[in-house]
Image (cartoon, rainbow, N blue to C red; front, top):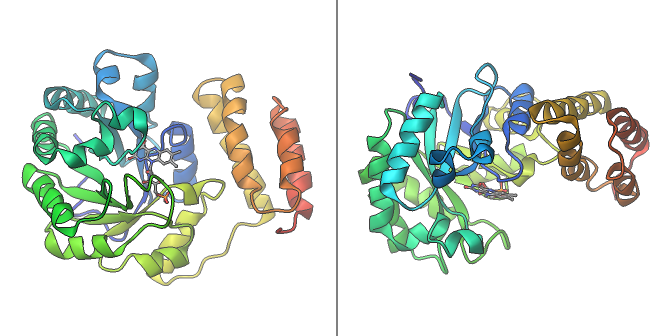
Length: 325
Ligand SMILES: Cc1cc2nc3c(=O)[nH]c(=O)nc-3n(C[C@H](O)[C@H](O)[C@H](O)COP(=O)(O)O)c2cc1C
């Protein structure tokens, strides 16, 4: 049994956000190789799929125990009893903590009363946390948004208090309402005030793309969670730790970048197979070359290649002479 605890884990907590279609085991391993102190969350995982033994769902919680610990598995669903069973399954499976998704704003998820729909039904959300806690000895946490259609401080605090009372040991807050989806900018003020209200740790999330962003936004929080800011930039986590701890940090050299991209390709291809890995890498290449002049030209070539060496050569040639737009 894991002895991981949100309460005692060293501060600042810096986490890789759960991101469906991105944070599979290969991506998480890459991030951990660049910055071993990061805590990684899995993609959100459907409790029904997990309990029915759906292969694709089970794959979402597969992790490399040598490299990825502590690993937090994120679940979504709406039936408390199934959360209990899924938490027991994950405990058996060997993860270090269980997180409950109460923030996903996607139509498909919300219309079936999952994800951020739970913010509108605090008593069901409470029962889900209680049931999950009953299914495991591992720490259970909640990831939520600051509201659904608008921000209402009373409702926000009340919901978070209820999660704490139900047994959540950590709350991560994404500083947007569900209605905002991913638009506009995240508001960190509500999280700072929430931190003063709760006894459990609170992590802030939204729009962190550098160490400077983390220093500006963290305030009294226990940590930060980074999602899109890690795309094409796994070094952002080194930058964040250095900035929060006041130590020096050098951005990666071209050689380090290329070595890491090569490793990313290798991890992606090893996770399923070569063909799948090369297809997966297409979305990542775009991020590695984002913001550089003529990136679109090389991107067009990169999406056509199914060969690792060819992809690396294209990237090496491009990155060695690239200039920002
Ligand atoms: C492609 C993508 C997939 C996401 N999938 C999940 C998910 O599975 N579970 C979850 O709680 N949030 C998910 N999110 C939300 C992120 O975890 C995070 O809260 C959001 O992107 C804001 O953080 P950021 O500005 O650092 O990206 C996803 C976001 C993106 C962009």
